[in-house]
Length: 79
Image 1 (cartoon, one colour):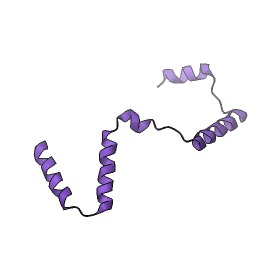
Image 2 (tube, rainbow, N blue to C red; image 1 turned 120 degrees about the vertical axis):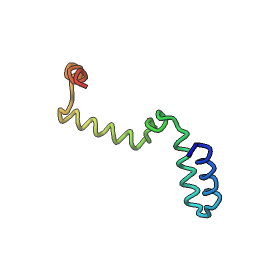
Image 3 (cartoon, helix red, strand yellow; image 1 turned 180 degrees about the horizontal axis):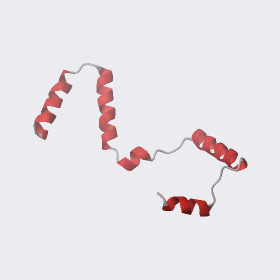
């Protein structure tokens, strides 16, 4: 089946749909498909998320759960 035939088939099926929730779900899927990979992966943090991450980081530092730059460089070589 070629692309034009498949698109026409999908359009016919869409015309038969009367479920608003399904139409909204399809719209969300189309919007998602339009986004670049970068936009999908890089979503901004909310203020609450950022504060939570910062507090967790401070606890890790206080507990000694850190990596030195030297250790990180060694680790990166094995990636």
